[in-house]
Image 1 (spheres, helix red, strand yellow):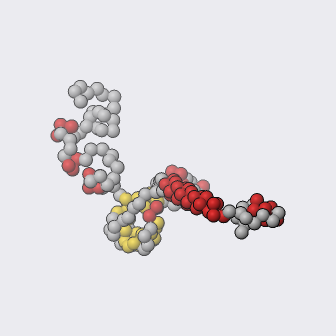
Image 2: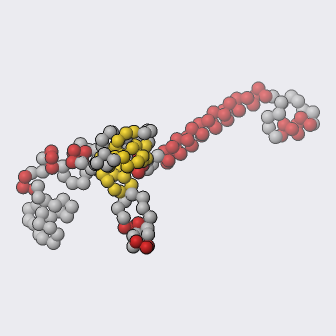
Image 3: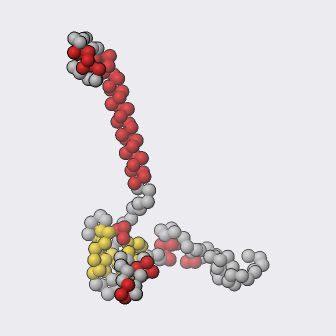
Length: 169
């Protein structure tokens, strides 16, 4: 039996007493090592592929924004770069497949089938307060701020607007 390249030359020379019993454990170790390396490579590739993917599932009637696909048109003086990135809100009418949804507008007219990657959930106060959306400021419905600081501008850090000095805040 020929297992390696140098076995050919030994076989031609008439040497047939190759001890395969001593080489068999080496092949078993080699096989296990290759299996482990393939498993590691698959895990690394899976991790890198899924870095910017998000698991999302929408419910029936949930408001979502739809990605806006437009082309520039010089004859109409329209530049796609300046168009809104998302349009809507639309509502989930039905789930067509695990990744596609049929949308309808507020009048109940079906607006087509869209992939989940082209949809973005509408931010609501309830979702923001329950931690379902990245916080954009204090959640006022839970009453987390004292009454005297409700009018505080958290984006600029100043209740009276930019450029004014406030003592004690």
